[in-house]
Image (cartoon, rainbow, N blue to C red):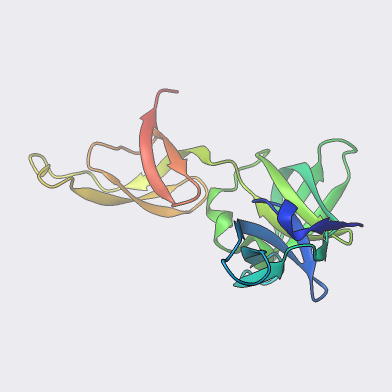
Length: 189
């Protein structure tokens, strides 16, 4: 695809390291008193999820990864796969459940997500930061038991189980933070 100088590395730049795509999490230019300047980076492996740290000498070129992100709509789950539709050309594609990992808990029909591709193969998804989901099951909270921010278990329409405050009831619409999996607030609707 091309290359980039080590001094131009920034957060979210996609690189190809040893034939594997990585995204830069942190990049810090360092000019020590002695020796050549370098960029200290922390990168996440887009295929397997692990992080690495690398120092790249100033002036050294790093290959950019041919990574493409497309907006897609979640349609349904089929066996172990999740079916998405490209919102521009309406083509459907299956994404293996292993790439979705725990994010399945927040996937709702027709939800817009970004699917990351490398070499025309899906390698991951990016959910919106917040989703709104209905409570389908929850035990009633005990009256007067509100000290210390008491919580109870609740099941959402996607079958995800989370902890919610005692005042939440079945049928309530909740805003959930997909990054932490935590309850944010009750939404009118």
